[in-house]
Amino acid sequence: MLFLASCGPSRETGKDAAESRESIYRRGHQLYLTMHMEEAENELLRAAAMDSTYRDPLIDLGSLCFDLGMKEEGPRRVDRFRKARNFFARAENLGYREAAAYDRLCEICTELDDAHGLLKYAKKNAELYPYDRQYYNLGVAHFAVEDWAAVVKSQREASEKFRESQYTGAYYRQMGRAYMKMDRDQTAERTFAAGVQAIDAVMAGVKKNGGGTASAEYGRLQDDKIGMLLLLKRLHITYREAEKLAQVERQLREAGYSK
Image 1: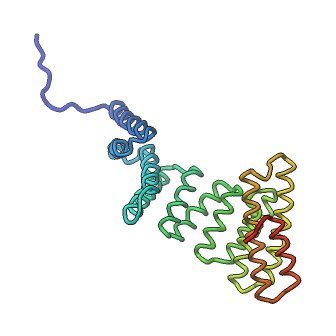
Image 2 (image 1 turned 180 degrees about the vertical axis):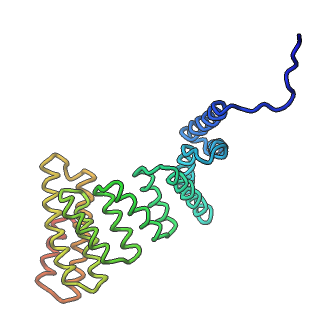
Image 3 (image 1 turned 60 degrees about the horizontal axis):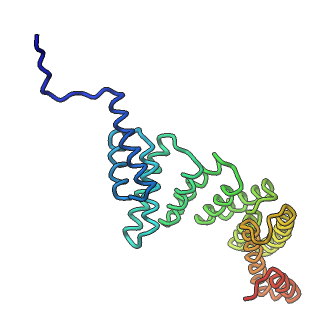
């Protein structure tokens, strides 16, 4: 007996649909890795459209839009960053909470001048990954929304928790700047002075451990030290502290600052 095949549409099994979704994503992912951006975006969008709970293409789309945004100018740049933020936020809602994603979301919010968005993601990053860099970024975020008390609180906690971090100077620098915003210049002066001492101790440790003055860690510490010395110089000029001004100018020369 001859059985005729149905001429109507066939229905994919769940496994077949998942494989199709995966294969499209893998193709899009490979295109993205090889910098075929337009083709990659099309395939990744196809994969994402097949399943609203499929987060892998959303992660790639967020990174792809960010990469393209960094190369654009004007409205197209803003549009790309907004799309990137949307894709990463959708992936986060599906459980994607990696430090790298929050770092990227913070960068995007900074590019979009979204201070409250920056604070939102910096807080999440610091809560999930309570490390030195995340605490530094949290201070930056609090500063962006002009919450000076929160800047001081978060950076004081960080300075006590990460005494040998390359961000040590940044913690004190942000604290001092926040005190200046609160018109507490004497406290700011003491904070900067303590920060310079803390940096010197960390820099000595870097050299002792073979990091060297050419290392990125040493360079960050040196930049923060010079930044705080310049702020101290401004305070000493304002309050006409000639002796302190001479001392800080000597420290600046010793630090290699010649402007």
